[in-house]
Image 1: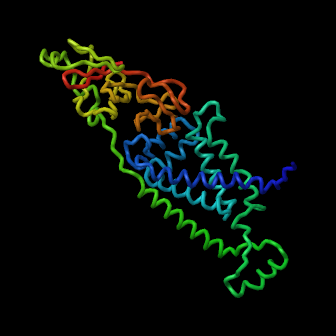
Image 2: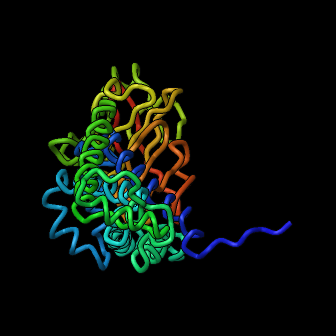
Length: 351
Ligand code: FES
């Protein structure tokens, strides 16, 4: 059976649809994330911008234009992604929209994906080159509004010219004024989609912090618990063991009451040894687990969502049981930390 050969332009049509729809989805996904605009959430845009800018060649651009206004930047990027996606999908102002998409992905390659090794595992470089054919050639030869045939002219004065096109069998370009009207309409659709996405997002429950307002080292040095505490409380290592403890490890620092951390929730605290952020998780069995909260990929601070430790910067995921990498680019597991629960209080042990 002979497979019909497509023209190069038509063969690129599926790629154009993929890029357009993916950008629409990316914008919706950002705005429907309850943590995206919520400071302190693992996926907060401000945290992401900080991570993207850290030690990357494009970081100064983010630090100059986006980091000072993270909410505006986050919403702006999401709405822009939706608009680019709609324009590219419809094939309207395709070259301009594709150039904007290329610019956005190039900036992400120089920031968000910069630390990804090997380099070809970072998606932004692939997206950058995927945009290039549409920057160079637009949607010529493909189904697109840029080259749509107007069969029923709405304005009398345009009728004769358009009929001439129909008679000749050629493709009639849309008037610039018409394209501008369509652009305005698609911009309105983009804003409407952004609004609906924002409304659909659920509420965000802020992560607990045992170090808020004070460094952990100042939260209260713990001496050995009183005999009453020792008799009534249990000490529990961060690795899940449970045993009676007559005294606390040397240098243990009180973080707060264990009742503040129900099963299935996490909290952050400052490591009393080196001052770095750590994450503390109580699993479904009531055991405490603690790990360094510094992502081993590029140093972003990890968070906790739906039973998994997640990194907001490049999608790294770690097991909340072992700290092992389960997804994304992190090259190594999170370092385990030791915490102890005794007398109803949780204590961090310096690492
Ligand atoms: S810093 Fe890249 S995945 Fe965490």
